[in-house]
Image 1 (cartoon, one colour):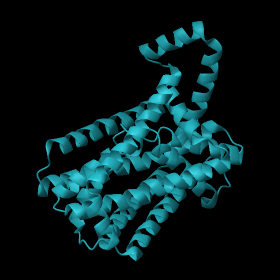
Image 2 (cartoon, rainbow, N blue to C red):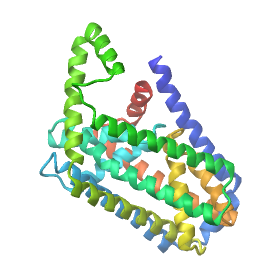
Image 3 (cartoon, rainbow, N blue to C red):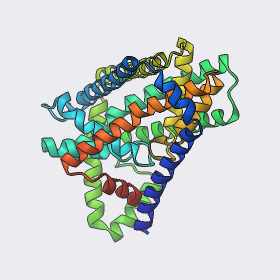
Image 4 (cartoon, helix red, strand yellow):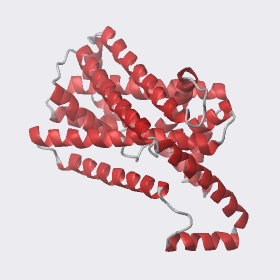
Length: 341
């Protein structure tokens, strides 16, 4: 059964890649024509802005880690972040595979508790989640003022809202959970574990206790949380800059309203945890949205091809190379996600 789940993950990954190539295969002539006339300097700047985004991301991560680890640099975190991104991009569960690996690599590098590094890594992602929720909500509000959204896009927005509410509720309940006053369900689980797996129960309670304490310690600094929220919103500005530069490279002019609307919808599509890195969903959905916004088919397909090459394929390949340096098998990590789920 475990092997079956692992193979299902790999099959989903393979099918996602096939779907992506099928989408671009339909428009390959128009795409090649548009890309052949693209401004390479602008594409280089767009790539540079993406790596600038990753650098700022490392700064935010370092802020949370420094509450647990005194001496760690952005230079040390950058390659680890790329490994985490590559694993996230190759597993069909949004940000469920790369974050534990990031925390584990920091633990190995600095020799500290995994509970602490994982708590800091999860805490670092919370401002990103909240800033993304704000961006998507704002973008969809603007979109509904200027455009008539199709039913499928409203469905994506509804899924995003449900997932966002679930994540926020889970974090709030976990951080504020009082072990001394558990609910009926928790008492039942504790009773079962106590009778059947007392040794596992003790280890689990000890690790979760350390993790919960470290997570709460990481987010109790209000100044740190507000600063990290500001950085998260800055990252969205990097996203808009990259999108603007790619359209400029293709010779297509876009307005600020266009950038805001497209960014929010694009982020919502990327958050749908059905395929690895939202492959197929991001490409097909984004092309449909761009066509809806009046972008010519050749420009829309070329834009998505360049955008995904910069933000998906490039960091994925770099992360795999770095993972080999660290002695991590990406295939094994993918199979672990399949087994654990």
